Length: 294
Length: 182
Image (cartoon, rainbow over all chains, first blue to last red; front, side, top):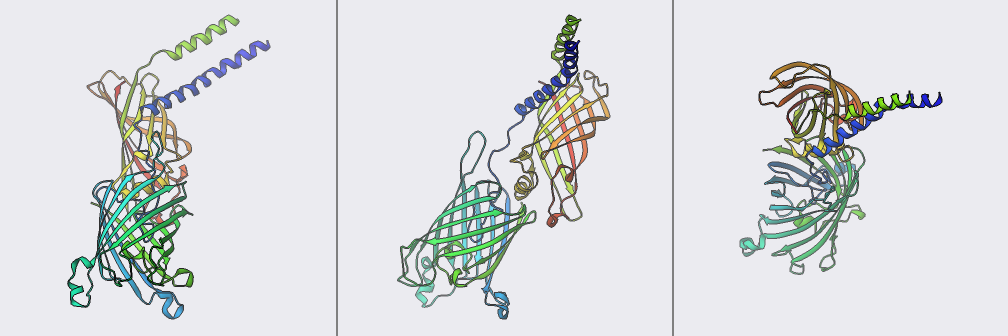
């Protein structure tokens, strides 16, 4: 009788076991039928810039990013309304994605030197999981800055090549997990003519930075550009340090930051600064990014 | 008695494994749309995989979230990262049954077919009933068309208060698949 019971239970269970098996088979079959999605890791950073510097995020095909950034004056206290009485710099940029791997940009910064910049960013490798994993994203950023301000004497003013600076950057990033991403950006800046003859034409800096996502829409970012000690021609700070927030609101990204830099183009902020963050030379700045689909 | 039972089990197993008519596609179209007073957007996926078991009246879907294409690339990134966690939950899966008697040999349109099933999306499995039209076409293919609403909160997709006005709590999903014999 006991045996009978066991067998009966088995009979009752059979359809369930078979059914579960069948469902698994069906979804297994569906899985093999499904065209695989791209295994590229996305959203390493919220936008194409970490704060001042470029990130490995790209402007994708036929997208236009318009970005307006401001840096205010040095924060002293309530008498200058924490620096906001005074706009130190206004930077505007347009970046367009020719395809998913080439991005072209035009920018203009009023300080210093009323600089116009043309740039290109090439996305060479993307971090990916899946069957063909790759540990990091790798991009190249190159730019030419044209300093359009008036110079004296007249010879200096008319010397076109003396107005050009060149920027070369390798950007390497890795998204470690949902929240933490880090970026390393070795940078070489060549200036055809420096303001002071003791300053070097070539400056090498290393950018180190990252973001930590603390809510789904917000991250805290850090960025530090360290100038390699290949020169010692001025006492003012050669490095730049920034800390800030990314706030993403669907199509817009707001970035708020505190920085010791006042320049917002890499030809300048990555080499010499007005102040030292750790000696309370801190400016507040922000940038607003809007993406358009063309 | 024992023999009879064994026979019965063996018989039912055979019954299960009898070959059935199976129709498949890997290029099904799934569109979802979010509409609010402030902003409307949609995303399209043309790589939905689906199997239709004709005799058993079973239909199943597998839709990879990363295959949804948005007009704005940034939105696509944020969709995957922030809203649906597609690294952790790569696919939306649905399996359902219908009861209508459908003659898959003669061209005809069957309207308002009720499909009862389960939807697995963003780590949540919930029963879902959708109304669909099933078309048996002249060339022996079959089309499946359905529109339904999906409540994001029910599937644990949270919308931050910052963008509450821009994303609808219920997104409209439309599905269009064309099956061929595999």
